[in-house]
Image (cartoon, rainbow, N blue to C red; front, side, top):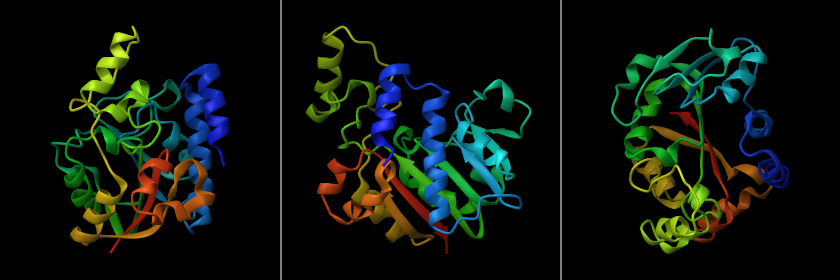
Length: 232
């Protein structure tokens, strides 16, 4: 369980590169435990890559990594790596090619068209390819991001109370942060039929994977939902 270490790191240093490196390292451990062979010969797309910490770790393991995001925010040490610009709500996914593994970490809740993303993402995968999708679901303790826990009061009242306390925030509901639910996302995947769920777990305590089998309760008990999906 990595959650206590992440909370400790965030309290001391904020969400610095080491914070994301810890997340990525734990996610790679989980992927390998689910049968993903991380190493040379694996083509990877780090989708919504941000600073590129997750993809950079896979690159260091010998994977052929392509980074993609709306703009190039990569750390200096990754600036020479393959990069493609894309808006995940509007652009054609076909320009990104097909890969053995697509990583989409902490991006899903920032999409205004999440179901479109799920439908289009199979185009990014080679036959049998896998998608690692993780995101902060709205009813989790961190669902409102920096204005948590006020998000439990709704998308309008919650931010207002946060702002009234003199706290700054970047995330705005309906603009760059959207309400997502685990149950609804699982239902979309089942209904669309292009992806199969190989594994699911609360990202920061994957040992308690059984929590995601509990309707309603999982929405509150998972700080972040992690899914391993396979192209059918």
